[in-house]
Every structure is written in C-alpha cells, then in structure tokens.
Amino acid sequence: MDTAAREFFRQLLETPSPSGYESPLQAVVRSYVGSFADVLRTDVHGNVIAAVNPDSPLRLMLAGHCDQIGLIVQHIDDDGFMYVWTQSGPVVGVIGRKPIHLLTEEERKQVPKLKELWLDIGAANKEEAAELVRIGDPVTLELGCHELRNQRAVGPAMDDKTGLWVVTEAVRRIDRSKLRWGVYAVSTVQEEVGLRGARTSAFGIDPQVGVAVDVTFATDSPGVEKKEEG
Image (cartoon, rainbow, N blue to C red; front, side, top):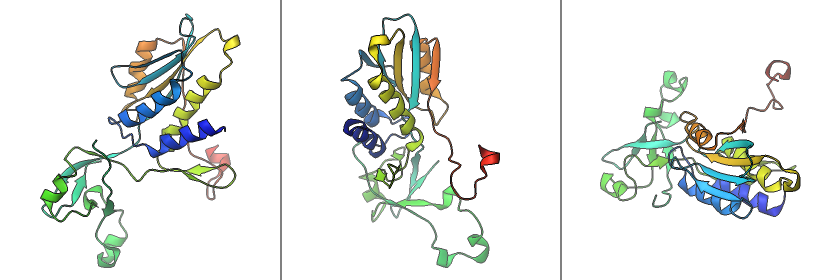
C-alpha cells in the first residue's frame, strides 16, 4: 500500500459517518478521487460517484458504502445525561450504566438493554448539555485507526470503509490503456438502514454489471470452525 492510499484509509476510519450524516466523509472521498476521476459528482441522495471512461456504453459499477452504524440522542434528562435510541463538531462523552458493584445477582446475568445505558458528556444539568447537544444529534463510538503487526490495522467502522477504499483504489489503479468499459466507483450512503444509496445510485448510472464490495467475518480466530463457517 503506497503512502497516499494508506493516508486515505486512515482518514476514512477517523471521519464520522453515521447513516444519514455522511457528508463529512464524502468530502474526504471527493478530495481523494478528484485527482484521478474523469467525472466526479454527488447525486441528490448524497452518493459520491467517480467515473473513468464515462463515454463508454458499457458501464461497470463498483459500490462500497460509507456509512456506519450509529446512535441518535433521544432524550436529555434534568441531570444532563443523554439517552440514545438505537455538526458543529464532536462532543466527547462516555457510555455509562449502573455500576456492576450495585447490580443484583440476577442483573449481572443479563445483557444490559439500550434504555439502561446513558451518555455522560460531563454536563452539570440539562441546560448545560443542551448547549452542546440536541435531540436528534448522531452518536458514534470513538473513531481512529490503529496499526498492528504484519500490516494489519483495527478501528471502528471498517464495515464498510474497507470496501469503499477498495472500490476507489480499483479506479485509481486501473490500466486505462486497455479499458473498454466505463468504471464507476460509488461511495454509497445509508446502507446500514436499508441499502438505500446503492439503489438510487444504480438507477442513475444504469450499469450492465454491478459489484458491491463489503466485509464478512473472519474464520482464522480461536473458536471458529472453518469446516462449518468457511
């Protein structure tokens, strides 16, 4: 992986993009693909489309979704704690629940329900919290990219920013001298809530062939039987 590709991957993982709020990440994508795409556009749904050889009647669509699973602020109580239901800048907080020392024996055996968790941003009361956060604001886990040994990396939202990176790199590295097809790399939105961006962008491009690049689980970890899981 060259330096530019590595930096692009890092930026993807460090930029928040919960479903419906993908604009900050799409700006990163546009900045990167603009140097090599013949045509670059954003459709009305928010999908970013980078094409090479767009005049060809043969169209290949490569799709990778840019959105990640997130939460939404649903309620702020009088003490400034926020509860979530599932952009003026990030507000750092922690996810809290009743301390394990105070749980009953039966409660310790149960998986906590979402309604039992809250977000603490350090606000003293509801009014102070409301100065920073509004009901309906998106929430993500802390983002980042941490490199491990043997050219491995870890970070939230690799599903599907890995796939997005793959489709953009495919267009960047393609050998145009032998290219008969028009190739469209699409950074699609709102996959996590219904594959929405892939559908709308496919209607706009009308490809003869479409390939969606996404992730799946690994089977090279302890406790997973490859003969059963592949």
